[in-house]
Structure formats: structure tokens, C-alpha cells
Length: 54
Image (tube, rainbow, N blue to C red; front, side, top):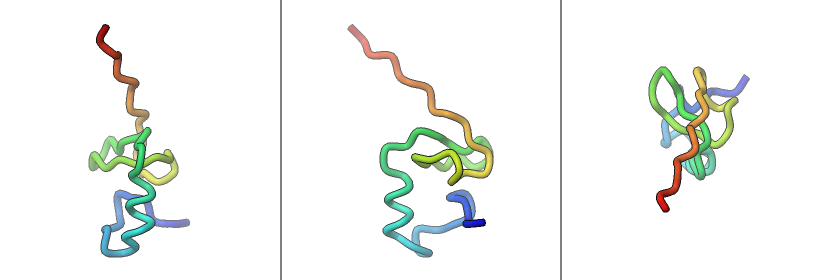
């Protein structure tokens, strides 16, 4: 199994790291990291949609 974002550093694979955090949809309830795929985090929680004013 691949490492989750919670366990890796941008130094490990910078391009893959940046790709994984573009347009985040989930955050980790343990460490607060964000990712665009649930499987990339160890304790994922969906980021709620923000309500637009107006």
C-alpha cells in the first residue's frame, strides 16, 4: 500500500505531492493535511461545501 499524505514529505516526491493537494476535497482528522482523494489520507473527512453569499 502506498504511503498516505499524512506520512510523506514534499521532499519524497514533490510533483506527486503537489498533484495530490490540488483542489482538495478531503482533510485528515488526525493531522490536518488535505488531498483531492480520500484514499490519500489516513483519517479522511470530506471538506464541506462553502455557501456562497448573495
